[in-house]
Amino acid sequence: MIKITSDAQTVQLKLVRWITEVSVSGRQLLYSAAANAVAILTRRHISRLASWKHISAESLGAQPTGHLEKAARATVHHATQSYGEVVIPSPGFSRAFHDVEIRPRDAQALTIPAAAESYGKRASVLSALGWKIFRPKGKRVLMGSMQGDEAKVLYFLCSSVRQRQDRTLLPSDEEINQTAGSAVLEYIRTVQRKAS
Amino acid sequence: MKPEDIERIKSLLPTTLGSEEIRGTIAADILRRSVFSARMASATYLAQIRDVCARVLSGEINQATAVKELMDTLTAMGHSPLDPGGITNPASLRRLNLIVDTQTQMAASVARIDNQTEATIALWPAWELVRLETRQKPRQDWARRWRDAGDYVGWQGALQNRFIALKNSPIWAALGAGAGGFTDTPGNPYPPFAFSSGLDWVEVSADECKRLGLPVASAAKPPRAELSPGERDILEAVERYGFPQIGVDL
Image 1 (cartoon, rainbow over the protein chains, first blue to last red):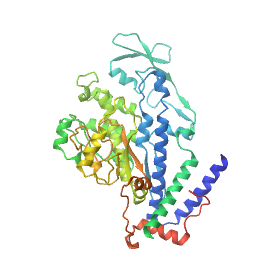
Image 2 (cartoon, helix red, strand yellow):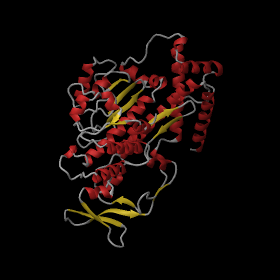
Image 3 (cartoon, helix red, strand yellow):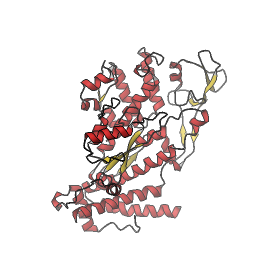
Image 4 (cartoon, rainbow over the protein chains, first blue to last red):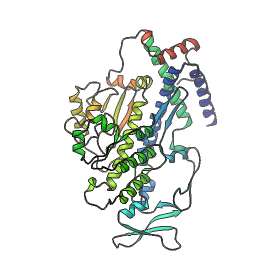
C-alpha cells in the first residue's frame, strides 16, 4: 500500500514538473483535463456509495434524503493556470481525510433524528407541520406528538458527535493520481494528433 | 466559476404570476439569471432563497437547514405548511425542497458548462442523461421527451437509441424547452430538464462517442496557426521537453 502511494506520488511529481514547464494557456487546459477526469471519477464513486449507504434512514424506516446523490450531482471541477480542483459541496466528505467533530452552531445541542418523521427535518420544521414538541425533564431527548397521538421520541440531544475518518467516502489517492495523470497524457496525445 | 458564485450573482424577480404565466410572459434567458418563485412577490424572501441555496452549494449548510431557514421566514410572513394548496402553498415542505433542489442543480449545471475547456470537450465531447437520484415515482416518459426533442432538432449530434448527445447539440435546449408540449420543464438547456427530475449528465469519452458513431471532431488537420493558444503551448512543451516520461503507462 505504501509502495503504491509512493509510486503514484512519484508519477504525479514528474507530471506536475512537466506541466509547470508549459506556458499558461496550455497549463490551464491540462489542469482542466485532470480535474474533470477526477470529478467524473468522484461522481461515479459517490453514486456507487449512495446505492447502498442508506443505513440511517433505513434503520428508522424513513425515506432517504438522497444527500449522497445530491452531493454527486453537485460535484464540479475548476481549473486555473496554477491548479485544478474538484469541489464536493458537502461538509460530510471531509471525513474522508480526518475524524470530524460536529458541535451545535446556534443551539445548545445537536438533534439526532430518532424517528422516521424527524429524519432529514429540523425540529422547528416539525413544529410548523403541527407537531407539539417538548423536552421531558432530565432527559436528553426531544419528544413530540401529533394531533393528540401518543408522544414519541423524535430526536436524541447530544452536545457533540465524533465521526471517525472513512477514506472509502472518496476514491483512493492511487485512483485519483492515475485518473488525473491519464487524462493529462491523453490530452497531450490528442493535441499531437490534431497537429500532426 | 463555482456553483455558489453563480447562485449569488442571480437577480431577484418578485412576481405575482403563476408558473404557466411566468413561462409564457418572461424570456427564458431572464428566468435563467433570476431567482423567482411562482406567486412570490417578496424580494426579501427571494433574497433568502438565493442566500440559502448559495450556502448549500458551498457546503456551509445542508438541505434540512436550508428548508428550516426558509420555513422560519415564511412562518414569520404568516404562511404555514398546513395551509391548503399543496405545491402552490409557498410553505409546503415539498415546495421548499423543490426550490432548493432546482436552484442548486441549475447552478451546478451552469458551473459544469462554465468550466468546460477545449481539453474537456476534446476528451469528453458528449453528455449522457442518466438517473443519478432515485425517485419513488420516476417519470415514465423520458424516452418520449428525448424522441420529441430529437425530432425537433433533426437529431443533430444526438443518438436516437440512448440519451447521449454532443455537448453542443441543440437537443439539450429542445429537451429543456419541453419540445413535444411538456410544461414541467424549467426551460434551460441543462439539467434538471424537468422539475424534481433525478436525471443528470454524465460525461461520455471521445472513444465511446466514436464507438457509438457520434461525430466528435473534424477529420481535417488544422494548420498550426489555427490551433488554440493553449494547444500551441502544449505542443511547444512537447517539442522542447519531449512527451512526459513518468516511468509507467497511464
